[in-house]
Length: 346
Ligand code: 1CP
Image 1 (cartoon, helix red, strand yellow):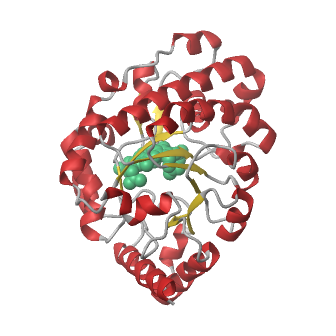
Image 2 (cartoon, protein in one colour; image 1 turned 180 degrees about the horizontal axis):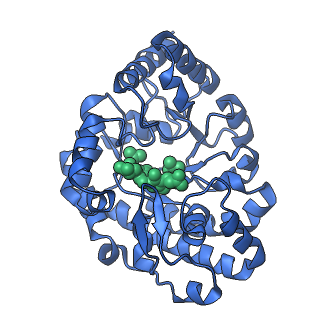
């Protein structure tokens, strides 16, 4: 029964025999088999070719005893069909950044099966090829994080252009955030219909906003996404990166799991979020560069912080770095399984 798989049970805060673990960006350049695929095709082609996208999703599952897989795609993949022109170098690059109300008005809300049929086909292939004990997570970007790239036109540390637009043109910004929310809601619903077993919303740049502006701009658009996907009944994970000062607001969102970056101890996150939310995280990705004994000590600290209550999914506090040694990932996964099972039997 899929409902009893440790990852899905932990999302629902049900007891599990061990703490489930998966790793953000678990498919990617730190794996030589991923680099071998990328030598032959560029990133966009990889995401648009279902057999290849499914293959790289499966690569980390073959190597490590992970408790969940995540669709190989990108948060920006579905925005092309809105009329936002997308390239990757290596992060997203937008050739027509959105900087006016007229541009916002011209954006379409596409039908996901027509816009990104390759994503839905990748999910269908994966549900056939994944081992039955490994559930598949579908994902999308949070409206505010998609807004950052759509307006800025590329990655940035500060997203100054996007934030200038947010404060300078609040009405156009609300309209853009609303359209992105409607697009992502439909996109995630289509992933669920294609076979995704949990849905994750990445808000990588949430931490650029203070709590007041997060409530004013980011939250209403996120609530539109939730209104669309909560009725589907799948576990929902929301990851507000660098969002420790936003958790009071996140507490009111109807999500099952909140991803926590490594800057906040999980005990603190649990205290702020209350007993109704599961937590996911939050080992510093840099811990994978420590000697093995230190890596395992730091992973043990994350288990200590999560405490004995059900509802913890082990993960890194953000994506794995491309220079990480895969043997360290294997050590981490095995340790989390063995150590958490030992503690539960104590
Ligand atoms: O091979 C390559 O060079 C491409 C690098 C790469 C990869 C492996 C990009 C470009 N995207 C991805 C895959 C990806 N992106 C996944 C795959 C599934 C997995 O986790 O294994 C996921 C979930 C994402 C989501 C994503 N893309 C986010 C949210 C998560 C996060 O890390 O905060 C963000 C912010 C992006 C944008 C993006 N796409 C790619 C890059 C290098 C970036 C970051 C750009 C920046 O620094 O702003």
